[in-house]
Length: 182
Image (cartoon, rainbow, N blue to C red):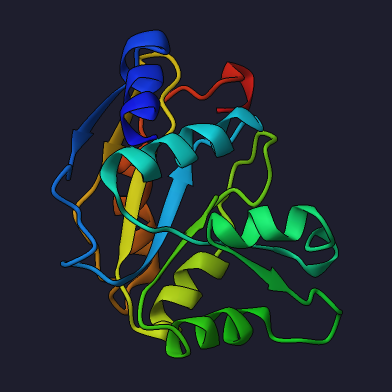
């Protein structure tokens, strides 16, 4: 299966991986992975290809209502975790607890929080990483150049403004599937 995915990703789709390609399961067992720009549902499939090619198990959270028969088995198999989005709950704490309860957990999120154009990123991923005491790994969804650029692990400091400036700079000039949302 991995050979087929590599053939599709590299040969048929013409994509490439650059940067921290040595990122392996043995090195970083827990991290928050941010994928941007998130402009299309196609991003999910590029992420699945990347996951299979690198051999790195990644996870995502989705509203619990999506985890119904029969699709729940597929979502769980590809690293999905159901999240109760009932109002009044501290979602940062709930997600950070997932890191405590798992030996290996790499949570992939879109910092924009939506597929539409945003001027400011959401901060939840940052607070999740800080609360769980795990690094942030950035990767691009660069449809213009057909590349996934993967960063080295970045450990958030106590200077959120500087951290966001650093992380945003990683994505400068990156164009998503829908350019006007990038």
